[in-house]
Amino acid sequence: MTQISEPTVLESGDAAPAFTLPDDTGQQVSLTDFRGRKVILYVYPEAMTSGCTTQACDFRDSLEPLTAAGYVVLGLSSDAPEKLAEFRALEGLTFPLLSDADKSVQEAFGAYGEKHLHGNTTVGVIRSSFVIDEEGKIDKAMYNVKATGHVARLRQDLAV
Image (cartoon, rainbow, N blue to C red; front, top):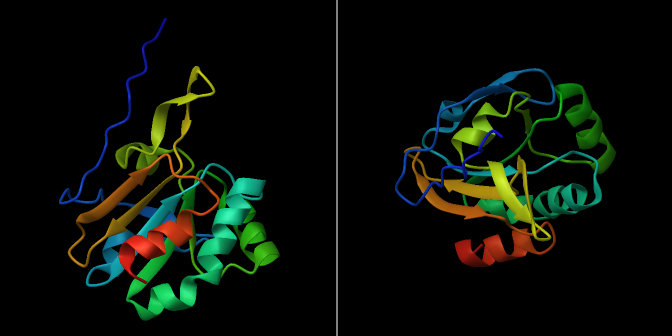
């Protein structure tokens, strides 16, 4: 039996793992594209599922105050860019959705790996959000967040 280890956990002050991924339009997006700006990167399990739709719509509905406070929002899942484009259009999402098909970026951020759900140990996406500062360092790493209410809590933590 193969032992799967717990994911690495990022903490405040750690360098955010670098990445370049396709977005929902097929364009390549790199974390370095946002150097000098604050980024909220949120990782979710699957586009067009109820919890992920709730969370995405909460970010959409909070985008104006987050942008006004200097934040860029990026969604990240392992969905293909075509599915992300459909999700974005269906829900009127106004921020980029990134495709991490091989889950390497999710693993680098500690948002994919062993997790505990209803008393069982499984391997999968760990719903997470990361606030990355202007220099590319982790300001806040939040793991195992809830789909409902997370954006409101995040806004409260960021005083936005």
